[in-house]
Image (cartoon, rainbow, N blue to C red; front, side, top):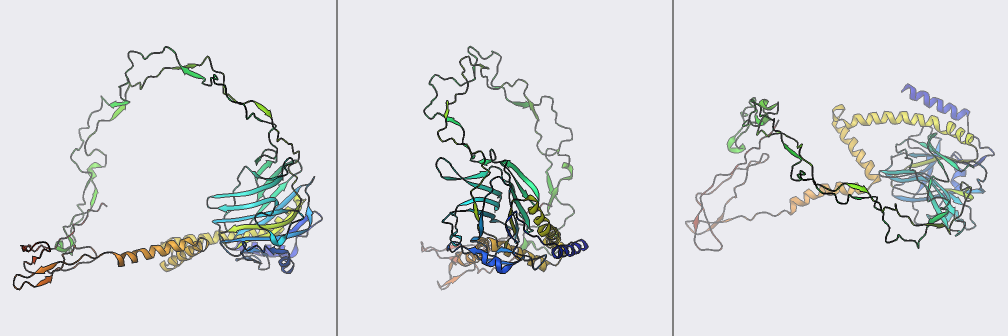
Length: 535
């Protein structure tokens, strides 16, 4: 706790004494501290498909109540929120660093947390942004169940067809899925290399020439589509040896395993000893009523005579059969006609082109968040696009690092408290129940289907009880006046409900199919015999 207080005080001092100031290398910076300016710059798409509501506010459990961010407040919504730049960004011959802070405040099951850097085009409309709006770079976290990855996608124009293609990094770096803030950094260099960092630690170093699928540059040569394998081509490297025959002493009928001829049954083996016996330490309870409760039987325990495993029927152990050879087949030898694996001949690729510097992306005119969320209160903060790694590092140190440390301390304390609540022996049972209900509500708010499952689980037993069929009662004919009466059906005694059964003296059952009356002997109510229990 003392460490947490010190970190909190330190963060406040740093926030007061040091404030990040953009430089000439800063292409875009947003920390949401000037709410009036930010609220006018971040534009929500007018497309009705994007109904999610965002707010500019502090985190739910803030380190500093004045530290604001952009929060996607609703679950199960699509968002398109965009900031249009005053000038387009060109990364030719310069490093390009893209960095932002992301926090899944309520955890994450299936939500996007990435950003898009939209392409500078004459027809770009910040209010009309949707999933089809062309972007130059898509970067950041994307989570759905067990599938999660950090995206880095570049839309690249084919110089021959002029059609844009999406180039995805082949690797799939993992996303941080806890509830504290994390900072995602992308560094693009003029030597056609890139680095992806999470929390200032590299998670992927790659090259634009060999780390993307599909590749930026197509192959120089391709398979000849008109070529086909000759009919006499032999591509079997080995063949069965010609003239080989099965040896006379080869016995294919020998089994894989046989009984051990040297095995002897132990002299102290107990063939007729049961593995389980009635517990001699148990006795019939004094309140036991055999008429109501059935015949009492002691619970079963392991037979102490069988602890060594020498009880029951003795079975001869088996061993590997030394005479076993299996099914005979001719040995394989090199094929003298083998020509090797056939491959079609290569021809020049008519679609070949060479992009020497695929690191150069189409000019960027806007920064946007265009995602579908199943999680509420996703917070974005501390955006920066710059040509300077030092500047991005300064922002990370001043605006995020101390905050992140305090959040981890708080989360660790909360996790310890939640772990205690999960253990009923550690506290009040009502608090434990309350905790589980809160936990269920949190998960169900993110996945409403859980509410339907819970409701169905409660409703089905009730429906079953009210709809199950009832057995019709039997009609009884009296010997004296031929009048009919109803007898009570004899019911089975259970461990929960005990019913007393009344049966009239020697009633006769009237058949609906015959006029003859048959005497039916009154039967004693049946009882269920208690099932053996094993300790």
